[in-house]
Image (cartoon, rainbow, N blue to C red; front, side, top):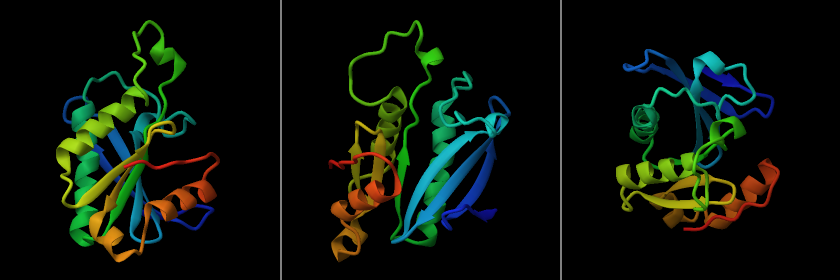
Length: 172
């Protein structure tokens, strides 16, 4: 399904059902210029919540869920081998952190998990993997697009700063 929000960006909606919990998940793929797509997902049961990206289901199946989102990414890549991807790892809610021994490593637990998954699933031949740990942004920038000069790390930073409140600095 395809819809447009107020900013006129195209958002494709994908759904999948977990085989373990039988919960339905929504994957939002937000299209930007230069073949760049932002990936977001959440459990359908919390779609009306402002915290839908941060809420935990406690079903202990993050690999399966992330792998399903990666399959959506693969579909976009099969359609267009010049695509790049990005996502923001939503912060943990305070109620989910209570009683947990959280280490001082930068980035949220989600961010570190997503980063490990992307590094393991995508090699360095196709995508430059870059991030802003402070803002838990992870980018997979298409090497072919970078080579043409159509996109640069600097232009991505500028676009992030124009689109969202904050100061974003992308590191490779």
